[in-house]
Amino acid sequence: FLGNAHYLLFHVVSAMYPRMLITLDEDLQPLPVNVRVGQAVDTAGQAGKPKQITGFQTHTTPVLISSGERAELATEEYISASRILEGIVILRKNPDYKAESKD
Image (cartoon, rainbow, N blue to C red):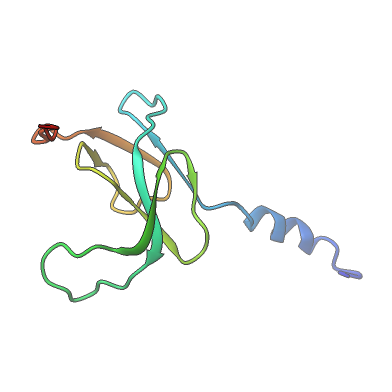
């Protein structure tokens, strides 16, 4: 398969890793939260706060994200330290969040 260039296999294998989402709190402890994982949508130039995914499913972290998919937080209970939800993400409580009453 690789013939005389067998050493290229070491470079290819080190570049392969699964796309996943793991959420941690500010103390770096695992924090299971609900996220929506769905087909990525291009939102460049759209006004307001458009959804970045379509056809989503709700999962609890940690989750695997396949190619062409994107994740977003299901509720506004937590604020992400990074704009992109991929890999390891640190979350902090949203001080303005009010839980919905079930009345």
